[in-house]
Length: 385
Ligand code: FEO
Image 1 (cartoon, rainbow, N blue to C red):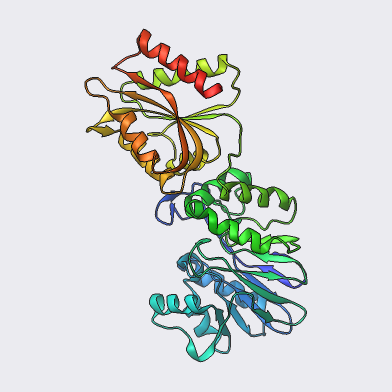
Image 2 (cartoon, rainbow, N blue to C red):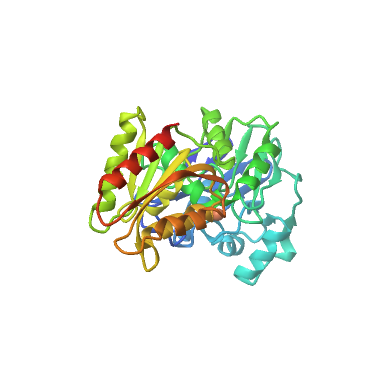
């Protein structure tokens, strides 16, 4: 248990056993599922946790409640990492009402075959649940990260219960810095939905927030401008850093040599921040998230099956489907007999909004030569113009 204030506690779980979050994101430092209890005239429990932790979570609820019975279970979100134990809770606390919106209960029925019609409270956007001196004002946040998501603002303590927003990967005791794992989490799960995140930020714009209590990661209680500023930037698809990202794959090292040559050319032109990713060896979700952090991106890869290399395809698909936009892209291809990688990558990226391309396309025919070195130099010029 972590005390958030005199009347509010955190009763979440640190999951150190998980290998892949949502079945795809590597989480070497685990993940936290946060649940909260507000004690007042009425007692509200906010969200449950992943199904693997039903017993310890219910034990913690029981420990915190003592002899009192909860009045409400507030369901912000039906993704199973938070909703899996709704039925267990409802069966344990039979007088508690289940609070959600119309979409929440439709999903509940789909997941559990139960929608608690006899003891549910269906809220609308902007509705308030009174608890005593505390209350929860619900603000719908569709697609941040599922369509039924609603966040809740508690005005007495100025706390925003933000659902998945402002979360991060990593158990609470991981001790890692927030930005990198929050970016990887954000771009991974809601990167596509920048418009909807902007809509939520605008709805919350006039609200005085002292603490943010998300469903994953630490409670944020200071320097909130930093976190909100990053969410604003990410959801507007604005770059976070200066500099250039190079993402590459290399089969026998010749494309890697071209990348090394470009790095030198860029450093010689005074670019201080060049971050290079070998896509076959780096975490894909991190590579994708970083692409959104830089204003310029260079892709270097091999022609493969008359397309381009699989790890690069996964990367390009990953950024395109997350609405990659407003960026400048340079292309380097390698092909020993029929190079088409640059043409294919460009065709995929041309589906993005406001992505512009360097005029110079570097074609390496097997290994670097004078022509491809000269093209790399021209590409470096364009990237630093
Ligand atoms: Fe953490 Fe969308 O669930």
